Each structure stands twice: as structure tokens, then as C-alpha cells.
Image 1 (cartoon, rainbow, N blue to C red):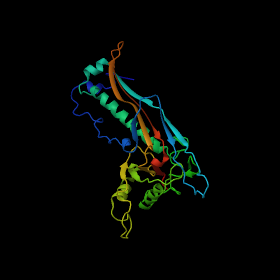
Image 2: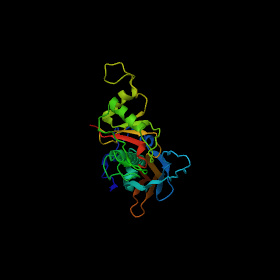
Image 3: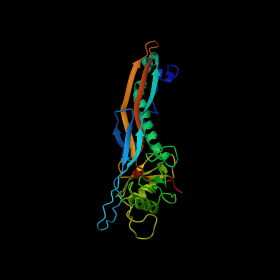
Image 4: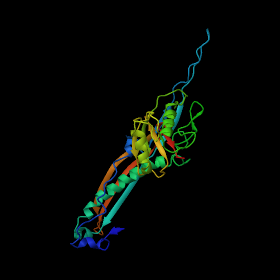
Length: 298
């Protein structure tokens, strides 16, 4: 669709005191705070898992050492997608615009692209509990009680019983994260880094993260989770009961940037219409389930 004089007739005449609707303050960039952003220079990027060794066994006197092999682990592939949006304006509309609205179209296209980035990245969390929606390297949903381990067995990154966000449920999350093991079942040191909530849980999150004493209790117990993680409130989370804890384990939530945002403008020769186009190419997903812990809420 092309913006013509008939589309914005009011902008062709003097007398309008104020143009409103395009000068709102935007949220800061949120997804880079929970995704590991990497640069891509290929048609696809692969992340390959490997294991170490399992626990050592007892060597009996005179017996040979037991030799064991590490394993090649799971692999995740990231294929970048091109996102694009554009606008077209007639020459007459561009020349007759009295309020400089047309010259702001590139900025508005860039705003749409930024929000597209946030939406697609946070959809990784929105789809975390949906089998098949966004499987990771191990082939199961991001939030699962049965992530298969290469060395055998499974591991969970969800609570035994889905629960709303409270100080107690976050304490449980911290404990479960500290109990993570690697692909051979060896203990690892993981800790929470960011607590991600929707806008409906901002106050609950602030109380849990910023209160010295136990939240909602008359006891004088200290709040043991205060400062354990940074609070991140996101308007792009669709389930307002769900909450997510990003850990310090690398290669959890991953984003590959194939090319940065490009804003182009040109004139169409046959119509003399002015065209604006914004494009960007990226991919997002997750590799290691230990990079996050999730609860759907009660």
C-alpha cells in the first residue's frame, strides 16, 4: 500500500497544532540482557556439545585402570531469518507534507524492527513449555522435566509442581539450579543471574529481590534470595503467571546476528514513489537447557 495525499489529507494544510501518536518512549533493549548475542557470518551456525568423563572407579590392586570415553553430545543449528518492513509514499505526498511526518518514516520502521526483535526473542520463553514449538539441542522443549543426558538419565529445569512466583518458590528455583549436573552426571556450580517476569509480576519481583526480610511474613527471617538475581520485567511475555530464571551457564539462550539493521530509501522509477525499507537478519533459540529454569505459575 502506498501513502498518498488522500491517505493523510490533514497533513497537507497548515493549522494543526500538534502531531501525536509517534513520539512515545520505548522500552530499553531487553533481550540482550538474557540472550548471548553472537555474530554470524554463514548461512547457518552449529553449536556442538561434548562431555567430559564420568566419576572414577576403584582400581583393585594389580588390576588395570578402567578406560572410558567421553561422548560427542547434542548439536543445535541456528539458521538466520530475514525480517523486513517497508513503506511507500507518492512524490506528491512527500512534497506537500507540511509537518515533516514522511521524513520520520525511517525512524518508525526502525522502531517496528526493534520490537520485532524483542517479540521473536521472548517467544523462546513464551513457547518454553510447548513441546515441539522450540526444541533445543537435546530435542525437547526448553522447559522440561526430562532433558536427556548424553551419559544417561534425565534432568529437569522446572519445579516438581508449577507454582506462582513467591519468595519460597524462587528459593526452590535457586536450589534446583544449584543441583544441576553436566551430561555425565557430574556436579556443576550454577547460579541464578536474571529473574524474568511479565508486567503483572513486577511488584512481586521487586519485593522478592529488594526486601531485607521475608516477604509477607511477620517473622524476622532474612530474605535469603535478595540480590541473588537481577529483575527483568518484559512486556513481551504473554503468560503473565509464568516466570523464568536465567542462569550463569553459557550457551543457554542464544541469538545469532547475521546482519545488522539496514535502512534504505530509493525512488521507484516508473511511479516516482519514494520507498523506505528496513531489513535485519538474525536467529534465536537455546542450546543448553541449564541456561534457564522455568515455572508456568500455579
